[in-house]
Image 1 (tube, rainbow, N blue to C red):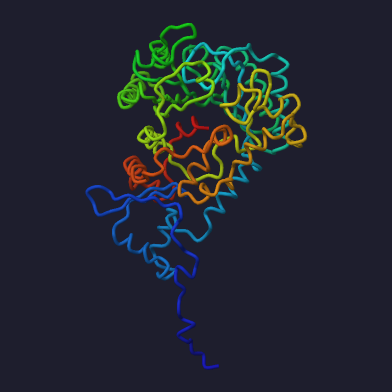
Image 2: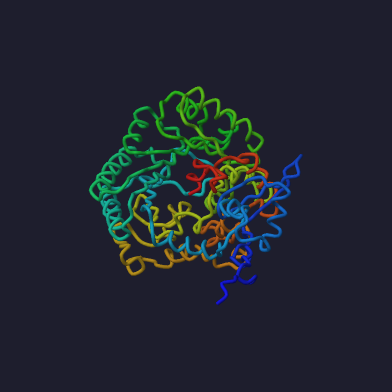
Length: 464
């Protein structure tokens, strides 16, 4: 042995040899007025500017020394990686189904509603949840906790209009919070309400019941709102909702959803400014976000129409909405992809989707009978459970599997895939508009240096 080191032994590996490659989920756009490029990584949920030299280094990435200092920075942002991101998304989808942090219960104390909105996807009516069904809900929650070993209970109060039955919201909340204490798990809740029936007494009750956020829809200013969100039997609602949001002391966040359609899309900016001013005046945490209206069988059957935005016309609204809730990529679209998230109607029927919660034909079982320890055998109609779960990653669609948007849309809404067809992101063919919207909102901030953007938490919750 001579002790000499050969040239071959001193040769370092390239980044390509070490497995580094550009992410398959990068979107880019030139930053106007500069030589820089904004790159958004949909898997990691980052967006930042890159100078020409950085762009060049990315173009020759696999030839760089594996210890080149640019690698750590780019890897932290997710624009390069040394693993299969698509396989990771599929793994996340399986984990979302089988390894819950918390069980999710969307509870409808009534399917009745005091509004008659023309675009609503529900057929309203019926009474309130009976005491024996409430018993079944609590018993189901306990079975789900025991079977899943989840660390929390997450409740969404839904309907119909849940505040038509505030007594049920309060009594069931008390029982579910007691169950959480007994099991040593966390408890949290949110509510979807039209806001018309809010009073200080109701708000205080919701606060005691650990409601952390509410969603209230306002469709425009004054008469514009009243044209689509009116009382059953007729009558305006705008002034009362706004008065409630201004005059009540609301200790939780209120997400103000704007259902955008042809008749009100011109008011997006004005309504956003109005909500911002209303938040300042009231001291309440009010967060505006727009959401394009889409059609529904229930609305068609009622013969009531608004000028619905088709997907192509909704592009600018969709860009704004999605930019507000930009987040880390995920393996599931919503709770319909999790075994441990269920909707419960006023009769105790179980469904996987909010849009199906009033439709018995989509029910897979009841709160009384369904046992998550043996979910298929105890389901009254197992197909209604499996057809939703099986739209999760890996997505059963080759085009979706290869699509750059996969971390964000995860194949799209499961209910739409099942009942209609795949519904792609409205701005799918205009990625530069989305990247520039992200760049305008996020820019080169510290959140991106840490490898993750600030989430649009309010809109993200409301989309679940």
